[in-house]
Image 1 (cartoon, rainbow, N blue to C red):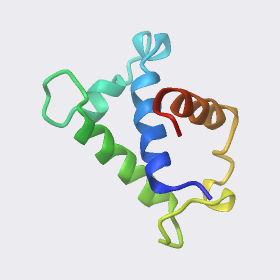
Image 2: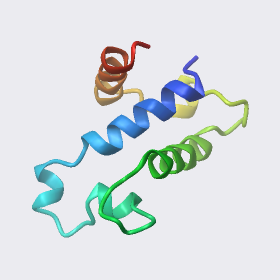
Image 3: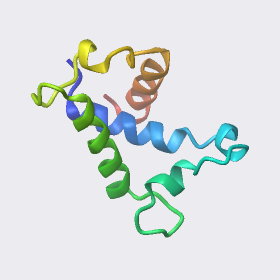
Image 4: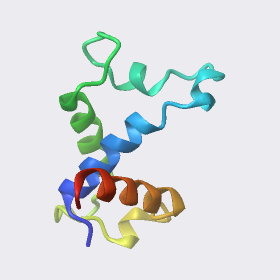
Length: 93
C-alpha cells in the first residue's frame, strides 16, 4: 500500500512539476493559480499539502488512510510511477 505521506509528497511534487508548456499555451489556470489560495503567485507547502490532501481524501473511498490500486482506478500509471521515482530520488523514500 502507498502511505499518505508518500502520496502527499508525490502530489506536491506533481503539482509543482506539472507547470509546463501545456499550461502556458492553455486558457486553463496554471497550477500556481489553481492552488495559490493566498494569491501571492507562489504555492507554499501548506497550499500544496491542502491540494494533495483534498485529492487523497477524494480517492480514499474506504477512508482507511491508504490508497490501493482499486481506489486509484487506473491512476497508477506511468506518470504516477515517474512521480514516485522523482520523490524517491529527491526525498529519499
